[in-house]
Image (cartoon, rainbow, N blue to C red; front, side):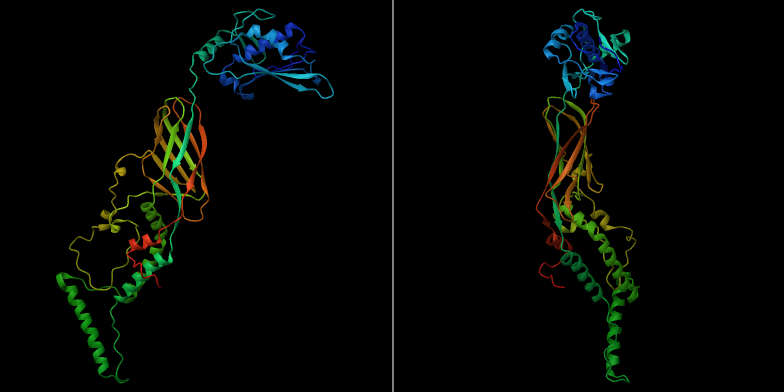
Length: 449
């Protein structure tokens, strides 16, 4: 006779000397029926939902039982389960130093939507037509509440299969900028022009230490130049130069510092004008209609997402947001109340139609890149590709062979998260130096310091 040692809804340990008794075999059938009729939620608490009966365990340990053929077990058990009964299997574990075995009976996890498994034959403590239920401590006939639970589980529809594939359409591009030919050259050219605008107020070399015609000529030249500047300033109510020479030179130094600080962001903005945008593609490979699909993609490594911008026809319309140099030395005209108008405010407006429709994806730099995509409804065997043109993917340093990406997807009606991996190809490096020089107004033929 099988001896009970422990009682849980997912585990039962038995310790008979053998399974030659028909009644002992029938107890296995009762356990299989009871374990299969548990709720899927409760069954999932242990052993990944399997019901487990271990036979050959006593208080002295794993003593085992005499070997028995699976066919001999099936002859007794199958009539109680029927042709459409629960699936079960047997695993045999040898006992060291003995010809006996420990028998492990595994009952498949219950599933949502399965009907109640009914006993199909009469036997020892088994009645045809009864429904048995495995609970902590015993396998017994199901009570009214348990019957309701089993019936509700059978009426529930199991979720249709989900087979989603996610990929990133586009490439991550290594970006190269020669700062000596672009950044340094732009600052050098601008500084020279600003300093050249300073008036030469120093007198010419005097004819003698005591003074002479040279002194008079030098001062007369300076006075004439200053008078000319003042006349121009007074034209239409102009304002004479108010800065001192030192203040003017200090403003040039301050501009250079701000220009160099703003340069990295300007390079990233320019890359957004010159490279193609990346998009996320979601494929529904199953014949299942998915609702409210959301996808999150994580790109690993030093890749960065930059704002994509339509390249304007006129290079002057490219907005790099670099600080403007100080006004050249000299008089300035009155603004007649228009000083509050900032022309660059209007020059920076984008007329990209995508700016006026909601975006289905958001790209964020988080040390790498994270993308959130709202797909919405996804038809069977259909593909949805974002068309936001939001971001380009770049490397500003050394680039790997490819970018590894992981993704997670959810859909309404599925209490699960679907995951997978993909990769983003790394394109050929793009040297943007010459294009940046053109936008900065530098002479391509003059690269010398």
